[in-house]
Amino acid sequence: MRAAGAAAEGLEEFRRELTGYCYRMLGSYAEAEDAVQEALVRAWRSIDRFEGRSALRSWVYRIATNVCLDALASGKRRALPMDLSGPSEGGTPPAGVEDAALWVEPCPGGDPEAAATTGESVRLAFVAALQHLPPRQRATLILRDVLGFSALEVAELHGSTVAAANSALQRARATLADRRRRATEVPVSRAGDDGVRRLLAERYAAAFSRHDMEELNMLLHVDATLCLPPYAKWMRGVPDIRAWLTGPAIGCRGSRLVPTTANGTPAFGQYRPHPDGNGYVPWALQVVEFSGDRIISITAFRDTGRLFPLFGLPDCLDADVVHGVPG
Image 1: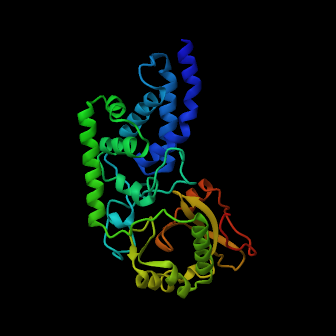
Image 2: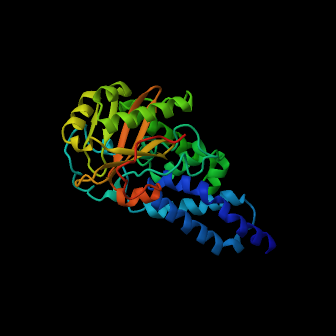
Image 3: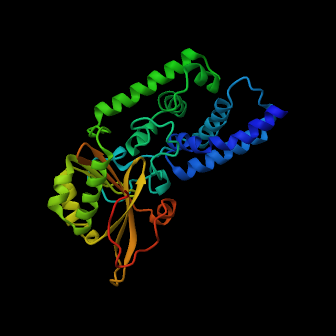
């Protein structure tokens, strides 16, 4: 009983890393927070049955995995616009994906469980790719390749054999590798000085606010993408992005970008000039990804009413606010 009491007191320390796990499983930070809360409640209620035959961490992850599997049982799969159509195909969501809840969403900060993250494991594109895996394969790959669980731990977590856990991992890796081969996504380079990336982000914020197409052209990779959830429309390449910004998106001219961080990369709350000329109003949360010294993707989420509070962004800006990036 004393051991159970000590274990109960230790449950809360797993909340942060569990949030990162559930975010990758579900593709939604809000759903991940709900899943973690449910998992911790289930764990607390059944703590008397924890016999210590496995590590407390593995036991809690088993519960969190089951919560996520229950949530995914409906077959709902989140995606990014490029998963559903070719570039520049249509300006509204296609049939069946009108609900904005079906889009992969950003998570605030560098990573909800930074101590466990590796490489690209929290990138929007990676989280979206995970959604194509069957849920149990998805869990296996995250547990093994991101969180460092052993094959035996994953087998015990799933109630399967080590051979079955290894087979699921190999199938999941093969599926992701095949998606990479078929996609034209620009590889991400994490190497380099963070100061360089901050400088590039600052240049981007200034150029976007000035609507300086020449500077933006210099910053964009030749195969960069721009997508606009909840709309299915997206585009690839500097000419198409420039045509969008100077055409349908001309109203973004004069915007102010307030810096934040999402999915381990620079992000900005975009505020467009108020129609009456008095200050600026929320327009989109931009998540900007880099490879080397070029921008490879911009994802502009329009659900500002829900995302801006999550990222600590103000609900309006005064006229004297200027762009900037975190130091």
